[in-house]
Length: 95
Image (cartoon, rainbow, N blue to C red; front, side, top):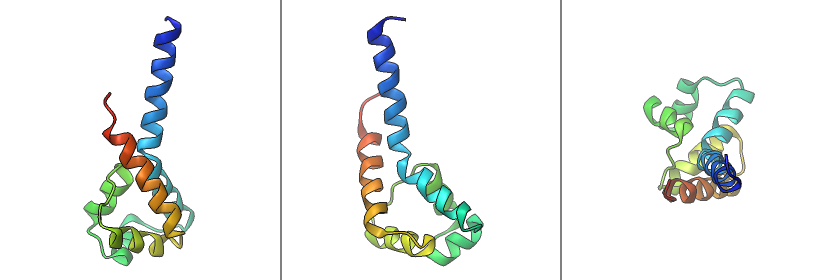
């Protein structure tokens, strides 16, 4: 593998990690609270499928959804919002 191929592979893995920054944080926070997906979704006013999508990489456009998620996870809204921006940006980059 050439140096350029190695650097490109590293960049791809970094972009994947950043694209999932919000998802991984949401899942980690929920698990640290020992909360089920169903309970978290109910508290946030989301469908279970929406919460599952959130933990799979969906970035909600609606700020009210992020506020509800932050409240449910007892997390800082600004931090989640920042992670949402990072995730959203990295999901729009070309592969």
